[in-house]
Length: 370
Image (cartoon, rainbow, N blue to C red; front, side, top):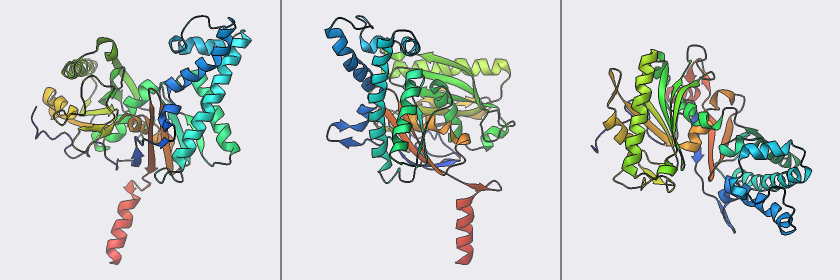
């Protein structure tokens, strides 16, 4: 791999704090209290542990309505069915777990709101795999009620897109709008501790320049946790998935932009390396000798007739970016993604007047006065 490969020419830097539509005020904050990392209190694993705790007294009296099935192996679909089913005791156990988890999520949310980076946050979008269930939606709604009861002026809402698609669509907002003028789709990658998902995202920019109508045209999923590949093996499989999608897009007649947007766990450095937070990925992704964007440019140097540009950002940031078109009625907003851990990002919208950035306008006015 060549160290001098440039992957962001004319676009931005990896993990950038300034993006076309928003400033990223913070992401991947790791807050702690006396019990450890706050994110551990509001993760999918935390909910399963709470659920198991509420089952314990029933197990001890041999009346557990869930039988012998381990709490972390019961599917979300089955739990959702129980919430609306006729087994009142089972439903009561779940509602108890939801209430306790909501209290934990409210506690964690308050801690974020007290940080300088999250000050004056007006709305928080909740994403991640946990949100994709009825019990997740109930936990979010209950948390909102708890925060309102405490007179906290912040709205807590579930992410509107399916979490599996939100991370892919969010990468559109890493790229400048000029990319969309001559193309109708991009390649997107969402990397997680269990899965790698690749997709072709249609911008539908001509119908909605704010990208509010963007949609995933086609996607592929690889559950890498089942295969336990090496880092190099994972990159090789990722490249094959992307090349297959390029071929499919060309066969369909899509005008694919020479751009790949990547959502990846961890703190992303400007050069595309990962500073920390990638411990659940296959192999050592935090090595100074590894650079995923550069590896992809080397493997896919061109898309169509143009040099490939690659841009990578934190996966929580990317998932939150899918909400940009729908957050224009507020100025400061954030995202919490409830999954294996608790992803987080806070944004400030970059207001535009007549298509021009207000900050640029203020800078020019100040220079004129000086």
